[in-house]
Image (cartoon, rainbow, N blue to C red; front, top):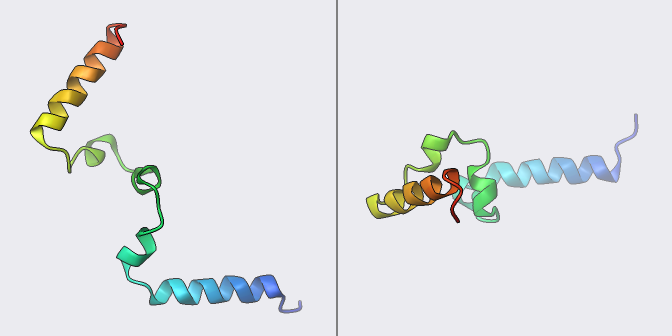
Length: 67
């Protein structure tokens, strides 16, 4: 099997990623991409008490049919 340009690009990308810090790798991701795959309780870890209360109120309104 011949070594293709696609093979080169894939290998080069992996090499560059290995040289980057975790922060550099995450820099280009959106907030949605960063939390994808996390458990719901892990998504809430960085929220303040006020933010948690607002989220709780929002969820209660949504589940009761209000918006």
